[in-house]
Image (cartoon, rainbow, N blue to C red; front, side):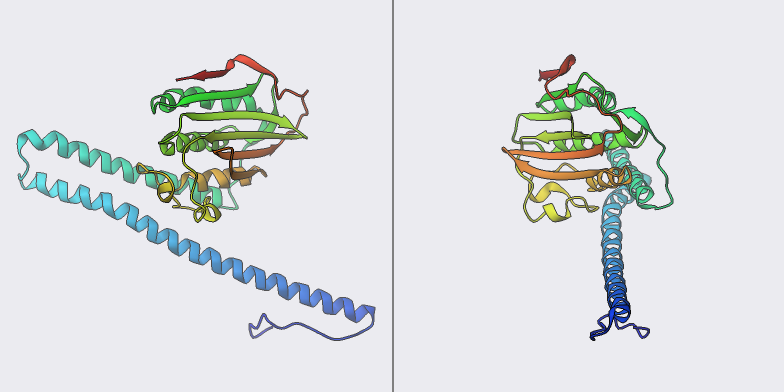
Length: 285
C-alpha cells in the first residue's frame, strides 16, 4: 500500500479484534482507491474543459483579429463598415459571456466559496424570474404556463445565486424548444420539500447526452437545435443547487423535458398544490 498498490486486501480468519482491524484496513483501502479514481476523473474532466474553453475562445478571437486587421489595412468598403463593427461586437460579446459563465462555474466549484443562505419564499423568487423571462419566452412563439402556489414555500437559499438556476433552465427551454408549443414553471410543496419544475414539450434530449447533462460544455445540439449557448448553463445550475444541499434532475415524461429542483422546505405550510393566485397562474402567448 505504501508503494501505491491499492489492490491489496487483507484476507485471513481471526478473532474479533483482529477481524475488525482487517475489515477497517480493507475499508480504508477501498475508500483510498475510490478517491484516486475520483481525482483521475476530475483531472480528465478539467483537461477536457480546458480544450473546450480554448476552442470556444479561439474561434471568436480569430474572427475579431481578422476583422480588425481588415479594418486597419483599409480593405473594407465604407458600406461594409457597420457589418464589420457589428461582427466584432457580437464576437467580443460571445467571449465576454463565456468568461463570465466560466468564472461562475469555477466559483461554484470552489469549496471555499460560501453562499449567503437565508430563509426565503421560493414562490416569490421564482415568480420574479418568470416575470423577467416573460418576453424572451413568448418572443420565441411559445406559450408560457406558470403554476405557483399562493401560499409561501420557504427554503434556505442565496437570493443572489439561486435565481440563476431558474434563469438558466428557462433560458434552455426557450432556446432549445424548436418543435413544441410550451415552456412552463411549476412550484409544489410536499413532504417537507419544495419542488420547482421547469419543462418544455420540445424534442427529447438524446439518451447519450443524459449521463453527462450537467457536465460543463455539454450542449443539446445532438438532440435539439442550438443557437450558440456556452454549454455551461446546466453545469452552473447543478453546482448552485448542490451548494444549497438540493438536487437537480432531468426526466423525460409525457413528451416533456422536465428539470426538477428539490430543496428542503424549512417551514411547512399548508398543502397548496391546487391553490394558485390569479396573478401567477396563466397561459399566455
